[in-house]
Length: 479
Image (tube, rainbow, N blue to C red):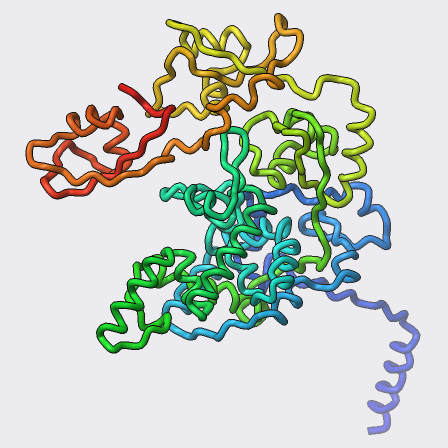
């Protein structure tokens, strides 16, 4: 046993003289992730472009998301979390139901849509939370545009509701929202938010319950009032859950609760909710004159799309001004805009109005003023149900023959100050025996194609007693 022990001791001594090398453990395979599969590839959606990290990423003290290259702004931490503020202001009773679970699953199973909705909200959410809390309202109200429009200021429904709060024209006018050819207050974030909160407060005062107020916001106060009366007549409860209501309204509050659940506990449901700084995103500036949308964006050193996302109420290439016009800009762009506007020595407007002459066609006008026919129709809201008669005034670009714009004299013509809503006046017609689509269309001075489109008719058959919706407008088709 002595000899083996001697050999072992010699071997150990030899090993002790060999240098020791550190073995680096490779990092985990980046393709193996605990994140949802949808996060593995970039999502393309209609959003404000993220801030570039080209210069900032060169500084070691600036945190950067290495997957997207986006600078992670330290202001979000110093300003606090807007989500925490919203959570602390929740005051509506919790709802647990199969409908809530179904909608929560839908939002979680469609992360692209949900992230887009939240990304859009970042521009407006601070302002809306401020306004909601000034009025002592529960902060669930600030999430309501997620249900109404996905926080899309350009949203437009089949019921002709517009903006993030989805006002129909008549309700918008009732709550003071200006609507004309140049501007739609239903899309304006400031004015529409004030009107929506006024409306919701009035509904809450009327029904004494936030869930009934929300149902009335979606369905209309008359619908909720009738449903309550029907239940009372049958000696049934009149709370939100006990009322009989349309499917959309029945799903309305559960959708809000589903979004609320995700905001309350994003980690628990596996949703990557990015923080939103508890600080203003935008501020206001004023312009005393008419100004091209494109020029205003350039003076603010913004893209036109980014500028429009904050000023969606202005629906034409020109922002008209009756002495003064308020615009929204990111907080860090307001000073830039004012300084550039002060030094700007070029015309602020490059558009003019033109009155169509007898026998002139849109194609001729487009060629005369150097604009694509599709763009001409888009700018002037000319759709397939509209004929354009002689005497109609169009917005066209200034050409070489034009020394100055005539907008100062023509922008407030009566036809421009009327609501630019093709479906301005609505009526319901009950079909009589012997009626046809042609006879109804002719009697109401509309086209058969428009009548079929409004009522989703695929053929020409109608029956006595059937109800048809008919819209009229001075600019509607007269065929």
